[in-house]
Amino acid sequence: MIIVLTRAFFILLGIVFSYQLSNYLYPGHLTNIVQFYIGFISFSLIFGIIGLILGGYVGKYLKYFQGKIEDFIGRMPIPDLIFSIIGILLGIAIGLPAYLVLSKIQLLSIIGTVISMFVYSLIILFTTRIVYKNKDRILNLIRKKDKIHVEKGAISHEKYNAKSKILDTSSIIDGRIYHICSTGFVEGAIIIPNFVIEELQKLADSSEDLKRKRGRIGLDMLHKLREEKKVKVKIIDTDFPNLEGVDSKLVQLAKELKSSIITNDYNLNKVARLKRIEVLNVNELSNAVKQIILPGEKITVQVIREGKEEDQGIAYLDDGTMIVVENGKKLVGETVNVEVKGFLQTLAGRMIFTKLLKENRKRFFNKR
Picture 1 (cartoon, rainbow, N blue to C red):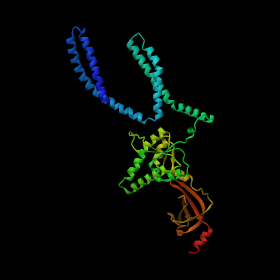
Picture 2 (cartoon, one colour; picture 1 turned 90 degrees about the vertical axis):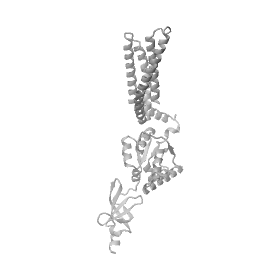
Picture 3 (cartoon, one colour; picture 1 turned 60 degrees about the horizontal axis):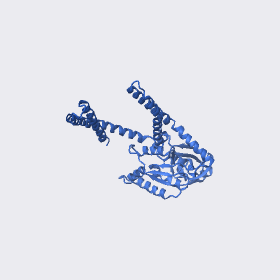
Picture 4 (cartoon, rainbow, N blue to C red; picture 1 turned 45 degrees about the horizontal axis):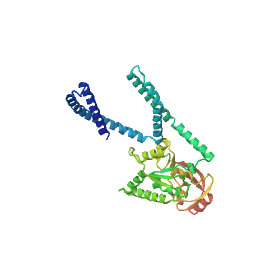
């Protein structure tokens, strides 16, 4: 479309130029009407063809720059775009009086016009940069005013609404987020982008058995979440065609909605936090609410299997915490009382090291 419009503009420009040229070559065209129209039609054809060709080249460059500008604006967070537009409008309003004054300089009309345009452009540029660079301070000022109104009781209950949370594919498939939501601990709306649902559908339709199972589990969890009355689930169609990968789209969406992301994905976790986006990790929550056991405490466990080290047995708490039982290798299948010696926190979770109580040693090892 832009190429067609550019060509039309250059053709029109060629026709106008042809009229001016014919008028210059054949002054008083009422007396030289034949010569004037022959010249006008001839020049219009020549400059119209030139305009058609030149407009095509210029239109291609304009289309290229249009794509770049649209891509740049598409990547800009909404607050940045809004404040940039506000800055441009303020610059136009502030710079207009200066432009009108300077354009009236009579020393040389061309120099006056050039100077006024230059100053006008500088005022717009400076105003835009000032507004853009101070957008955070302006937003903070607005937020402070909102807080003051809250304290005075002059604001609706909606100001107390919690921040919304965006679910990624990994957290949906994991399934624990459904159980967390069903307890009522999650405040604010749960947002599920349509591009996440599409990724789950692709997994569910995969030819690989494992991916297909994961996709179907995720879709089942989505259905359960939508039926859960203790949480508000919103499915939105917002997409970012210029961005590749679901993770990039999630980060951009969280920026625009000022929401946090719920994920179990390590890479998304790191990228989002680098972008200063709040991340809620279900694994971290799981570790945080695990049963706290201190050295010296006595617990009862069932030895499930042998450990990697010599004479070690392995047991588990109900929350999945691994218990390493010293001298427990020969007690697989037995329920024993142990005393906690210490623990080790790893990225995979917590490991608790224990030793058998004396009565257990007598009970089992004397028999053997």
